[in-house]
Length: 215
Image 1 (cartoon, helix red, strand yellow):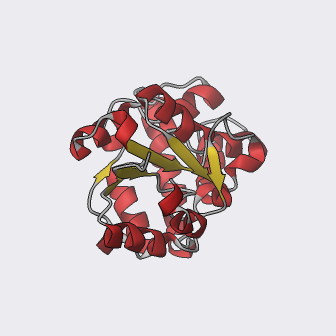
Image 2 (cartoon, one colour; image 1 turned 90 degrees about the vertical axis):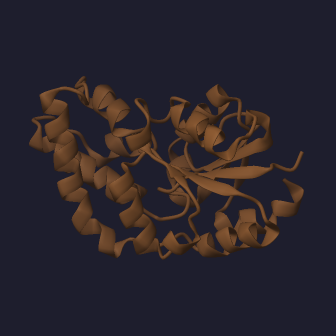
């Protein structure tokens, strides 16, 4: 069944930023007294900072320490933003959706301010018609909250939408929300684990754009 609208992840899906996120978290965790390697952190990129801090440090993001570490992560990540690039075909995908008249909305575990900065860096801000970020919900992916708010904004039943992400956390959030999902391998996250059973994988935005008629 052709989806009526798409919910699009940002990091690792539309912009090549996953490794930068991991490096920033390694530095932030070290600032907080937790020695973690890039190899330990990288497979967790895709879940929000709340889940990552709990998993790697046993720290609540609501605590004073958690807030300090999230600020440290942002401090380490922001200088990397000017070097980040859009995924090949990201703009073509959004333009193809617009030409088809297929609504789409961003669904990102990042904070709104940073999400807007990444969209600008990727040269996609002029094509983005709406977004839901971790600033709009209490829990980020793999919890379904972001997708549920996106569905409300789209005024759609879950089975009429399609989640497009790049990690198992996108797929899990979609499963919990009852939304079909496809994943893109361009973000590198699938190298750290297999795609969930039944989830179609495309190489990147360009590959998905070429398959829109078959979704």
